[in-house]
Image (cartoon, rainbow, N blue to C red; front, side, top):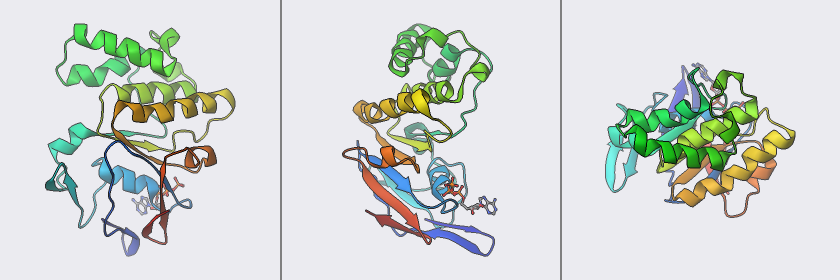
Length: 208
Ligand SMILES: Nc1ncnc2c1ncn2[C@@H]1O[C@H](COP(=O)(O)OP(=O)(O)OP(=O)(O)O)[C@@H](O)[C@H]1O
């Protein structure tokens, strides 16, 4: 995977292997390219010379393949939500996949319970705090059961109980059986037991 901005080479990565059902933190100084790398995986950023092997099939990252669109979910640092309700935002992706309202309702209930946002079900997400919004975004991603979940600095800009609540959810994301890669600077996330460490440094990826 190679990424340039004009003449500047941001990174060049020969091979990156993401195992099934494994958790990774991606670290690196500000501007190292962490968000860019995650956005590439999610098809949100063009890249040169990018090929992935997914379930034994070789695919380009551009144009972005439908198989990856279904398998990979990206959670933005500042999640954007419809100005409807928390319930609707969590349900939306499943309804868009063609699932019935009747099938989706209990899944959304369980996800709200998991994220501790049941009391906010009818709230307009634009009125939520940063921590509440991040928890709704995690619930919204989780119901889609992604094979790979990409989190961009999930605890950035949070402190106190809001940060603790988001922190507590992250290890349980792996229980669903998918893999998680999160870009972060948060020492507590980097130190989570069993998590693999990746570092972008001077345009190269290091396994640590
Ligand atoms: N469209 C663009 N044109 C030129 N440079 C860009 C563009 N988009 C991003 N960059 C640069 O690419 C670099 C990588 O940005 P990125 O957001 O991926 O870094 P990061 O490691 O996630 O940083 P942080 O830890 O601060 O979030 C930065 O120097 C940024 O300014």
